[in-house]
Image (cartoon, rainbow, N blue to C red; front, top):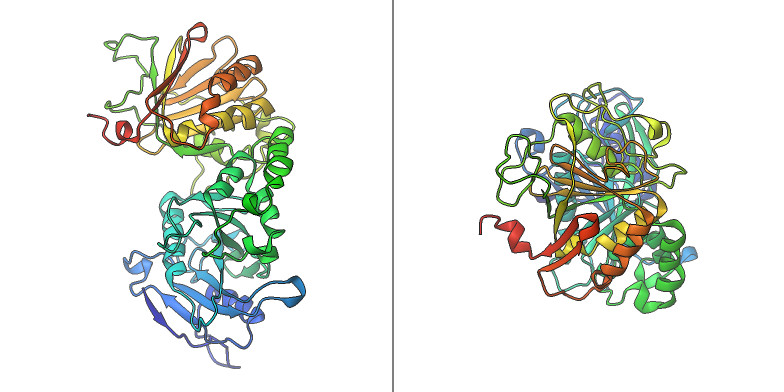
Length: 471
């Protein structure tokens, strides 16, 4: 990427526009906020993505915002991306589907960074951060939405900062725009500390964002990221953890329905030599691949069920192909799909298992109490989707419809996708037995938890077991 100062794109009467309509629409919204900055400093992809370059975002514009004294908003740098939406309408990057739906992925990213004293030009590292997020969206076709959290596990600016993760919210100033290629909304990246990310995972992202809006040094009403912030909102106000977060989890449950994880499962019901019919997913073995229908159902499971509904459900496997329709937001409500039946893939039968062994790395294992307390005790489901293959493990409560695991057969597999149905009584028992996983301190590994009467074993193993399965 390189920095340039673009022309303003202002159209002269009777002259063909200098910029494509999608680009013009976003520039127009930026000019509404910054009429005196028609030529902002801009980071641009040297080789455009549609010409084989590595950076999906064509441009990132950087504006100097004076803030808002009336709302106690400090001066900061405001970054706006161009490229997640359809800028051109000629299918060079995004398939043109008309003006009625979303343009491209339907959103652009923004970021607000506190301006340090004496700083005369915006730092450019946020542009690479935004490109990294855009690469994820283009490669996975998973879209972002307000309230989502992003585990980054590294200071956003590669410094020693405590700001190492992100939440997403609607930009407080930029309004959605309608382009000839569809609608575009603006999602703002908000830098957070590890403790704030964990609270968002355990409760919900929107709740943590609202708490941060009330703490000026943590972002204030416009959620401005300060990379020099050394205290979490819980350090600043210790009452927030117990009175807001813990109480929210207790009364509302968790808004997180699934995570990408390092995990595998073994079917202990079948002898290892029974390879023809076994659905065992073992470390070091080549797992069966998920069918397209199974993959779509797990994707729906991960993105749906996040809104609070009176009746939770696992979305059905559609018997019709989805065509070129892009995946919807992972926060759609379940609504009419709650009573739909699963249509199994005709080539892979669903199989009931007698005994299973689940294996997680430490980071995934620490989410088990969240899965049980924040999801299953509230009648919901939770999915661990392996980052190393097609393996998936979904825990379901007795109140979830559409599952192929039942109270009579609580362990059921559909290819490499395992579902485990847990009764409320068993969930309470497991929470007591897994209590040490609640601690944020490093636990000596491996750890094994077993419930012989339920024929269930869970192991928490070092990362090296998953990274080097043949060792």
